[in-house]
Image (cartoon, rainbow over the protein chains, first blue to last red):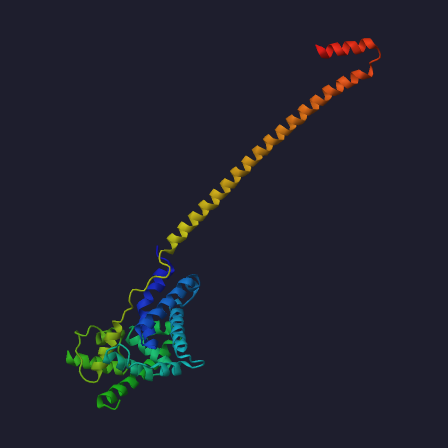
Length: 165
Length: 142
């Protein structure tokens, strides 16, 4: 019989990795962050089993781990999420295709909540309900934020095509 | 197909597309060729969906076996130590018993010898005559 960690937490590794990439934009660092988060998940497996939303806890832990990595590297003391992402944005030197860089550039323009919701829907293909569960917000909030993000995306793509970006 | 595709994008932009429809948009790149501003974005999303980590080692993989083996080894060690300690104590007890018995035997022997000596001294109390002295002397010589 598989343990709770093996059946519920371990299969999240690919999702967690892509989510870490959203913040870190570096495959090796994302890998480290995921490994660290999975180790924490393993250590706290019993507590996670009793939680209502263990996947949400894993996502939050990963996000905190990623932001901590960025802060450690940059020796930033007190920065909010948006500042960390802005200062970390060393996307040009990253080993990604032009199209992926374009998606990341767009995502970095969004507020943190919209960015995560948009990412979880478009990249991870999660249902509204699942995203609400991961982020511990209502489904209505998910829909509203997603719609706003898509509107911004449409404008962004149009401007991109016109060569304004 | 082209009409379906643009319909899907229309639904997507208006926020009315279902997850299945979005999976059609961002699924296999060969399924639904896209032109226009969405093309690069779609390629980017498809590439991101394919991102996977290198082999991540499972945290403490095989830990239950290691725990079990360590537990068994620890129990064996404790049992062996306990058994060794008990047999050592048993040996000590036997040795102590034998030493006490030997000591008691020695004391008994000494006491016996002492009482024999005393018996001879006791006899001296009643020596009154030369004949008695002669008799004792004879006894010793015999």
